Amino acid sequence: MTTSLFIIALIAAILFTVTLVRKPQIIPAAVGDMRSQIILFGVRLPPALLAAAFLSLIVPTDLVVPYIGAESGWQGILIATVFGAMIPGGPILTFPMALVLWRAGAGEAQMVALLASWSIFAVHRLISYEIPLLGGRFVLIRLASAWVLPLVAGFLALAIVSIAAP
Amino acid sequence: MSAAKPARVFDGAFFFLSGIAVAAGTAALVIRGPSAISEALAIVASDALFIAPLIALGVVVGSLFTALVPRETVSRYLGHQAGLNGILIASFVGTVMPAGPFAAFPIVLALGRSGAGIGALIAFLTAWGAVGLHRVFVWELPFMGGEFAALRFVTSLPMPILAGLLAERLSAAFPMFRIDWESAR
Image (cartoon, rainbow over all chains, first blue to last red; front, side, top):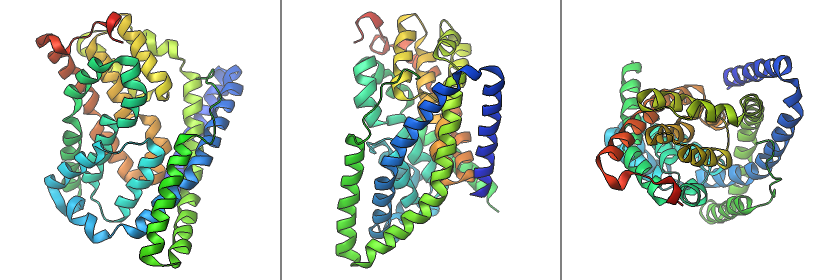
């Protein structure tokens, strides 16, 4: 975790320096944007984490692992894809849930398929943005072109994980 | 993005999440007894300790990036590109663009009306939603760790390109996969 923290702190420092040198006038707007996002996450994250913590206490590990564990192979990827497509929330709900599954023993490739599927089907975005703004025809074209991709990502991840594993 | 209206803080999402927390908490109390509360709070405390600073830094990165790369630049690069080139550019722009859905979808609408190809539009939206560097920083890295975030990012890279190419093929072959933007809404 400390490595992640270091990397992202470094990126933030670089971006801040670039902004300071090239466009210092945008900093107030950017800070305002940061503040409103942090307030929003600060309010939403506690109930999301609490929900995930309770769920992790009641979701039995031995129930999850046979279906989407590392040993579940391509069937696990199929199951994870179907499950991911049904998650109806934004990242603030999805990632705490994903953490529960991850800790319960879900496989890496299966989690890749699950999150890819969630991001492609994105029921929440479909209902609140895509259909109202772009129309049903666009959604049809997009899903026809993209529905198979979570499986592709999952299988690709399976290949990478099996090559990387000793 | 800078002109975003002040959103209500305690909105539907907050109450939805709280509802799930209460329901799951009740179930945990029934199944595991009173100790469930303290166990859950301990999990929340340790999660929050490593997730919160990462999310905060992710927000800093996202906001600075959004301010540095204005929406007009995005539109200019995507405007009238076609074919594989358009799909590749759209995939790249969608990947690095950190805007929320309230900016991304209107961009697609505006681009579609101004004549951008369907392949580029689909590639842009797929890259934004499924590859999204911004999400890697704000969500994937804090929750899932660096190794997993890298694996998911790499395996997602082909997705927008494949989706864009397929969308172009489909819309060339079948009338039902074509959009008349003027009557699309």
